[in-house]
Image (cartoon, rainbow, N blue to C red):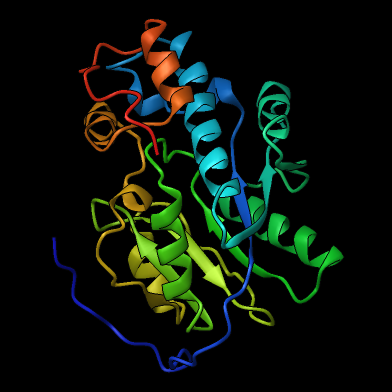
Length: 238
C-alpha cells in the first residue's frame, strides 16, 4: 500500500549519532481493552489477549538494541505486574484523560528524570513485533525532530518519535496519520516494517499478525483457547 508522501516545514533531515530511545507504551484497563475483538474473543478472553499483546510488544521492545527503557502507562494492576516482570517501568495514568494525555504524561515522566531523553510512543498491541524492524524504524526516525509510522491500514499510527528537546505531541486515535502530518511530524516511509505497523484491533488484524508470526505470550494465549483464528502461524517467534 502506498501513501502520498507529505513534507513538513520544521522537520528537515539532520543526521544524528545513534541514540537510545525511551519508549512510552499506553495500556487501558484490561477489562476495557480490545472491544473490537468481540467477534473473535469473548469477554473473559479479551483482557487476557490484550495483556499477551502488550507482553509481546514490551518484550520485543526491551530486546531492541536501540531502546534504553520502556515506560508503560497503565492503572491496571494485572497488566502492571505482568509488564514490570519483563523489565518495564510502570507509570500510573494519573491524568486519566484518555490515550493522548496518558502518552504525554508518560513522556513527561521519562524526561523528568532524564531531560535529554529521546522518547517514542509505541502501541501496546503489536504481538508480531520484531526487534530488528523496531530498530530500523527508530533509526529512520532519528534524522527528524519528530517522526511517525502509520499502521498497516494507512490510517492510524503505531509509533511516534521525538528527539531530545522536542515535545512528543501525540495525536493518536482515528485518522491519526493525517493528524500527525498536520502537526509537523515526518512520516517514516521505509519498507520492511510490517511487524511495527501491524496493530491488532479486529479479528482480521489478528489473522494478519498471525501470518507474520506472533510472540510467545500471544501464542500461548491462543494455544490456551483464545479466539478461533488460524493457529498454524502462532509462535513463529521474533
